[in-house]
Image (cartoon, rainbow, N blue to C red):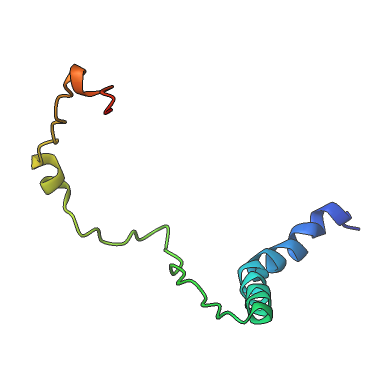
Length: 83
């Protein structure tokens, strides 16, 4: 026999995968009650963990980029109260 706790993930995984669809369905119903239009947000497609997507910025360009220097703050202009 198999314990019930071992079978629990078999039932939870499909339910968790359906949560975004269920959320969109319920939000559409709630918005319809108020007379608004609910548009589903664009979801990112699932990414493959074994083959990472190509980045638009190369690592060499990041290494050559200089960090931006912040502007110095004048101490007398920080807490000036205009009357």
